[in-house]
Length: 135
Image (cartoon, rainbow, N blue to C red; front, side, top):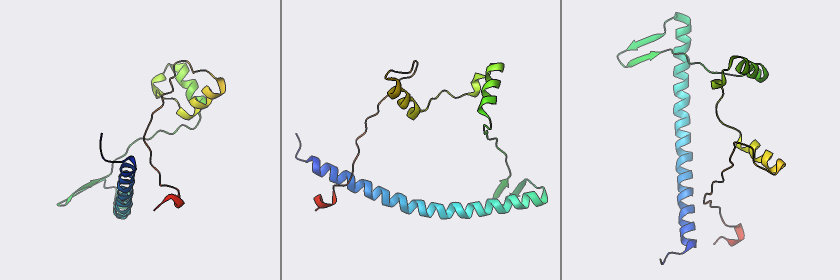
């Protein structure tokens, strides 16, 4: 086998995880400041577009333009489901069920839901030792 102990492997993993977390936190702060500045610029140009009616600002530095995307928000599920059934528009629905609710139903019924398979995913997790066990 190998001369490295499981304790050494766990210690190394935890040290790497802690270093990664520190770098991510530092990066998150720096990125947040940049995102805030970018949002101020976007808001300025959106306001300018709204006031002038101009939707494209072509400059030597590049072009800024207003674009519109569509988002969907369901305000009444009963109406939507009735529409889907009546018009055979099942493609409006995504093919996913809630894992949490599915587990709850299986636990309650004591049997699987037809057409649904609960899949367990195993991961190796790490945690710090209890305070009195630390060196």
